[in-house]
Structure formats: C-alpha cells, structure tokens
Length: 163
Image 1 (cartoon, one colour):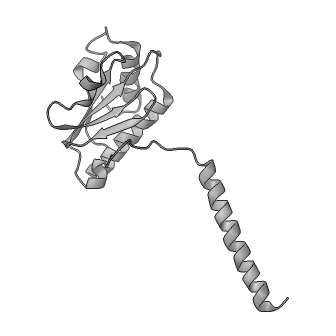
Image 2 (image 1 turned 135 degrees about the vertical axis):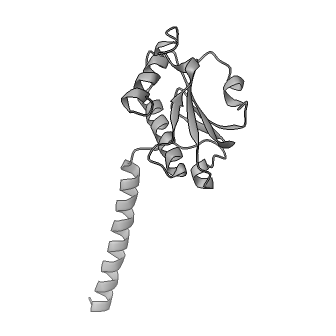
Image 3 (image 1 turned 90 degrees about the vertical axis):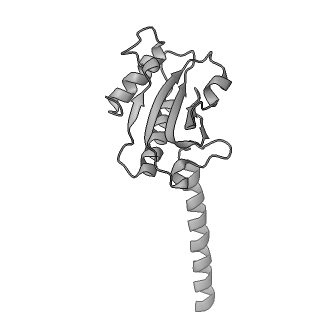
C-alpha cells in the first residue's frame, strides 16, 4: 500500500467514525421541549420580557378560555403533558399551566415551565425576569384551589422564582 493510499483510507475512516459517533451522541441525548406550530420565542425576536404572570388552569376549563389573550399580552401555555404553546403579543407574558387529574404537576411540565422562564429571562437580559403567581391561582390567598395549584405554588417558591 502506498503512502497516499494509506493516508486517504485513514482520513476516510476518521470522517466515518466521527459521523457515526456524532449520530450516536445525538441519539443518546435526552429530548428537549419544542414549541408547537409557528412559535418564535420573544427571545428570538429580541423583545425584552417585562413581566411574567403564572396562572394555574383547571383541566376542566375550555381551551378557548385559556388560549385567547384578553389584553394583548403574550401567552405561553404549558399543557398537562408538558408541551408548550406560544402566542406572541406584547412584552408582558401570561404563562398558563394546565392541570390534570393527578395530585401533582408532572416532572415534564415542571421542566418545561423552568425552560420557558429561562428563555424569557434570557430575552430580557436579566438573571430572572419578574415573575408573579396570579392571585386567583395562589393557594396562599385561596385555599379552595386544587392540589395541583398548591404544587405549582410550592414549586415556584422552592425554586425561588416567586416570593
């Protein structure tokens, strides 16, 4: 085997092994939440987020009541399965967390919630954009709320997202 042929075969072997290795790593990588539909985050549009209001939505509420922003605010909906949906508006955001029949929010839903808040903070250029829990979703103000609303409040308090 000549030196040129040997060098060529080594380069081809390196390219193939790097390609196969990269594909294996991508296959092993855990999935990340994807925005549904035509979802350009405000972070991608360079509109800084001013505030985020987190709202707990009961599972029996109709989708129409949840998915229609009533005052021009942007809307981010995190479904019970942890799938996010985004509707752009102004720099104020309502982040709706849709409940399920379970006692607690799912881990996937909590991960998606944190991921969305992180992206919104990145868009505003802050460590954490101002976040508040809506009064009608806060068990500290209304003890009659479902267990999942209490779990949401506790989660946001534990992560020091709200006070």
